[in-house]
Length: 237
Image 1 (cartoon, helix red, strand yellow):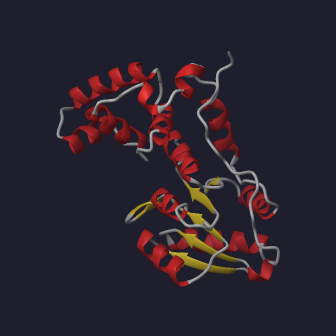
Image 2: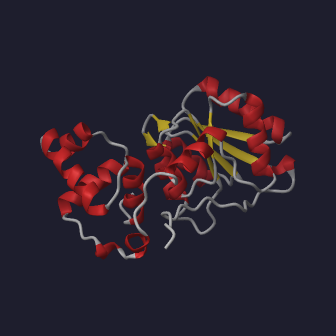
C-alpha cells in the first residue's frame, strides 16, 4: 500500500475582506525596525490598511480583546513566549482570525508546529522584499502564503522515511507510551534539546538520550520533525 503522510492541514481557501480600505492587520513583532518594515510591505498590498502593533503576547491578547482584526502577522520569538501559543489560542475562537507567521526561524519544529497549530501561512523575514510582497498578495487573492524555502523543506520532509500506513491510521492507543515517554515526546515536539528536556524532568542527559532512542524505535520515527508531528497528533502540543 502507498505510504500515507501524517495529516498536516494548510488551508488553501482564505477569507479576506474585499475592501482594501477596511483592512485591519495586527503585526505581532517585538522589534521596532521589523514592525516598521513589515508595515511598509503590508501597505504596498493593502493601500489604506490600518496596522496595529503588539510587541508581546500580552499586548497582542489585549488588542485582540479590544478590536476586530482581519489578519495577524505573528513572529515566533517574542519576549514572553512563542507566537505559536497565540496561534493555538486563536483557533479556539468560533471565528478565528487568519494568522500568517513572519519569522527568521526555518527549522522543521517551528514550521510544522506552527502550521499544525492553525497558521495559514509561513513567511521568512529573510526573503527578498518583492517575494514577501508577492506572498502577501497571494493571501489577498485567497491563497496560502508560503516562502519558497519553507515549501522546499515541507517537500523534503515528505520524502523522508515514513511510518507504514497501518501505524499512521491506528489510533493513539495502538502504540502506548509511558508517562515518562509522553513527557519526553512533548519536550521534543516543543523543539527542546536533549539537555533542556533532561533539566525540565530532573533526569540526566544520558537517560533522556536513551529514552529518545527507544521512543523513536517504538514509534518507528527517525527525525525530530516526525516526532513533532507525532506529538501534535497525540494532542501534546
